[in-house]
Image 1 (cartoon, rainbow, N blue to C red):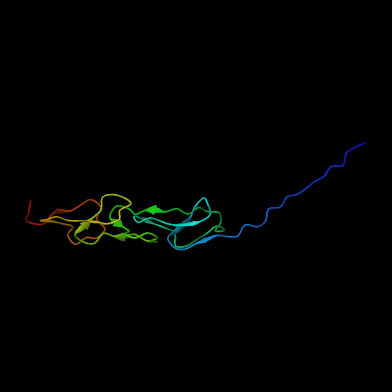
Image 2 (tube, rainbow, N blue to C red):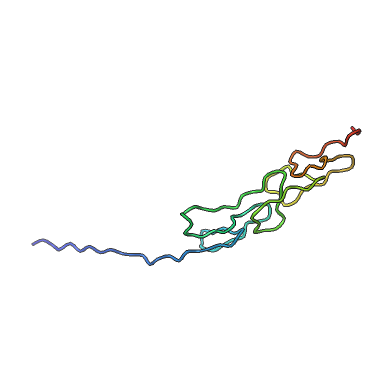
Length: 116
């Protein structure tokens, strides 16, 4: 006697798509988290967005983001600089030094013309 073979298909219930707002990413526990200051996050994200994983990206040297959940980094204003990625602010040039009006400076300040 042959035992009848029982085929059973288990179908998981559909998982609801999770959408995170601008500047937020989906954490492993299924909740959305704001990208920290010093980083930029995606414009918007959804768990059904082609399976791509979105991450918080550190601001490049010469730029910063002072607040969490930002989707862009701001270039350092003239007379300021930022050496490191992930900056939350820019450092002002000290007396006698300048960025010559350039914004987004990553290397630091230089002597003003005529000074050494």
